[in-house]
Amino acid sequence: MSAEAVPIRILAVDDHPIVRQGIAGLVAVHSDMSLVAEASNGREAIQQFRVHHPAVTLMDLQMPEMNGLDATIAIRGEFPEARIIVLTTYAGDAQVLRALKAGARGYLLKNSLHKELLDTIRAVHAGKKALSVDAAYQLAEHATDDALSPAEIRVLRLIAEGNANKDIAAHLSVSEETVKGQVRNILSKLSANDRTHAAMIALKRGIIEL
Image (cartoon, rainbow, N blue to C red; front, side, top):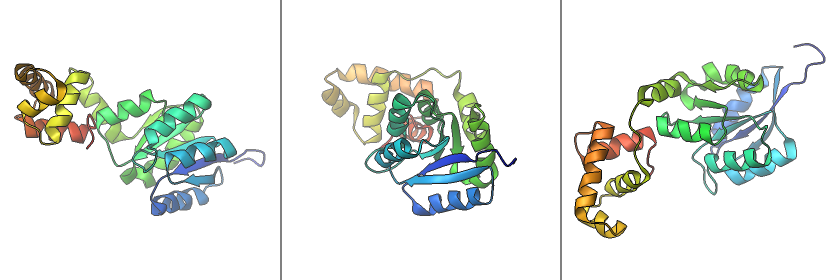
């Protein structure tokens, strides 16, 4: 790094102190980047962003009070130039798509942090988008799938909560036949063997959360 170059200013957002410490340790030994602030939930992330205006934000998804997706949307709404990299344990394609649509410019799995984090920070800072290999694979794997409709996702969520078709019909104020038709569509679109299998696939891919 030349004497005049300014280090990449980083905000680390994660509700686990040990993860933030790990990021701090990785960043500390590289002179072209600097950890300027930390936050443990989405609300703190927004506050810290306003104060520090980091060049790159590392954002966990699952956090108390306010999750990383909502925080990303809020920060990008206020600061359209914000460059945010999602750091998560979830590789589901639906989760990746939601993060990218919310304005994230990178998506990294925590298990690949040591290998990929520094390169991803530099790439996103340079204006590129960067996905971890696992996230890119999941997106490619399901790119041509028939998407579930919002109604089918509602039914799937109720299946995952343990409801029978009759209960789902009552809950959604539709006929049991309508629910059965939606379940057939869900099984077909997810290539699932049965209702339980469909719920497991949907949870793994991040289509639904419990």
